[in-house]
Image (tube, rainbow, N blue to C red):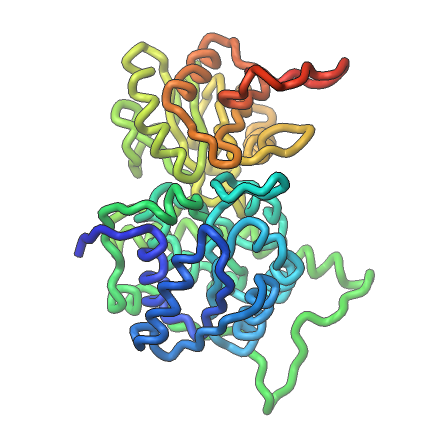
Length: 409
């Protein structure tokens, strides 16, 4: 049944229908509405057979999640921004111990200066923590991705972050169709952990590893990540078959003429411009780019759904022979450029594509359609440099010192 829902409420209802055994909660904007809704469902019994644990910090939220998962429960939590950084030590531990925890990250900028609005710098800061990172383009996908995340994480024994843009999605309402509990029961396998602490058969998880074995443990994590892309793609395909709509996947291609998401969109033609993005800015791009095609600018759109594992092979196939690749990046690697751009550049090394980094929307600054069209026009004309900060204000920005890399405005 289709209904009007806030994004956070949709996520909370979907998570509840995945039947977690333990939900750990420490509220921080903009994820607060998710854990508040789960708390209400736990109190009324709608979220049954689940222990809802209020904790005093984000570090404790992840620590309790680790204990719950290690004891054999399906575990869930949510966080954002500074909260994610506060739990960083435990985030790495969860991955190293192979615990399939699912966590919503309501993406929010990292301070200082303090900022509560959206960009991707929080999740990007932990991109190498050993967690799957899935990014939602809209609220329908944000809800659906949690079902896929539980399935993939538990098959792979890798924890998963579902990243949704703070406020832009978490606090926005939309017409959505949520999977029912019965549908999720039929789709999501019953949680059967391969390792679980048992007082009758004591074992140790997460022991000390010295120089003689640490490299091998990291190699095993790496091998699991090599398998993750195929597992995520398979679960996304199963989701489409079961529910009749797209969710997840490694990359999303959009049809050239309508820029609607399509399963069979052709790769980009040689000589054109392809824009790459992930998260809610994909909706802005869908609105902005058709006007360029009407002008005769051959621009295509590709969305990245799985940031970790990074879908290098799928991305190369989606791009075809694009001459210019414009990456809309929501996080800045200081002294280098856009974070996502670095991954795209490595994936396209040795190809004819020229990669341009356009860092946009830092700290929640609006990403305007006309600004996006302007950078694409410049890329098509061969006038766009390697790094652009979208709508950088001219006044008050000091001139770069001698030898510094110029940032185009």
